[in-house]
Length: 173
Length: 158
Image (cartoon, rainbow over all chains, first blue to last red; front, side, top):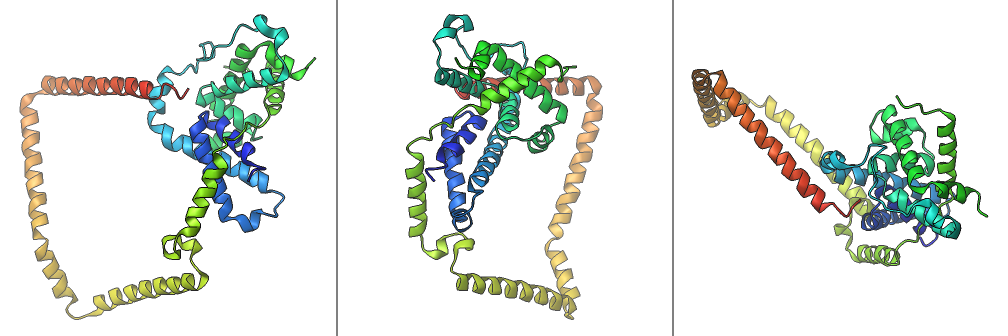
């Protein structure tokens, strides 16, 4: 369990953006894993199984507990690509030279978690879980066009907020 | 229409992809493992009949399955025997008499509905429109207040 707990927790946290919910989901994942302990203990695909279960449970959780009030929150959510995200980072020029890789990663992580769920979830599924646009549309039960637009907007939002950080992470000094 | 395939977008997709994939796993809370272990320990303490069926002893599982299948079969057989019995029609009629009040209640509802329809016709279209408008405004107010409450309650989520 200790080998996989960070991976499972990260998957849940990046999808839900909520520490307590992510911990509950991780707990459920490991309880499910325990029920199949016999199959999983020697399996080389145990990690993949845990990640898939964590992803599915997170998506179930999001649809179960948020669909009721999502309508209301979407009314005010900054889904407009030109809108401001509720996330404040100093202007890139202020601190470019002083950030090390860990700081940049922390900023990316924070920016990711501050994205509206409609953008964050498909972005995580695409880039971190390796799902195709079609698979994401099927999983989230939305149109293919919406998935593409939401991911596009999420990338733009990250670019606006992180600016030079993205390039810096890719080309560390 | 957003052009998803411009050079800028491709470059941005690659940058975001590499940046996200470079993120290390986040540290799970130190409480996670003890929580899971505590739940598993509590489950182990439970007697077999309080666990889910999947975890019952195999013999008990097989026995309960046999009882369920037997019970279902007996129920089907009994229902079939009942329809074959001579007193079936009589019993059905008796049952109908017992629930005759339902027919009366339904007729009352129909009479009431007719009376309401007559009243609505007498009131005229403007009055009905005003009622609908009032309902719409009331609903909009509910939605507005609900939105404010939800936003206040969930403010820290995002």
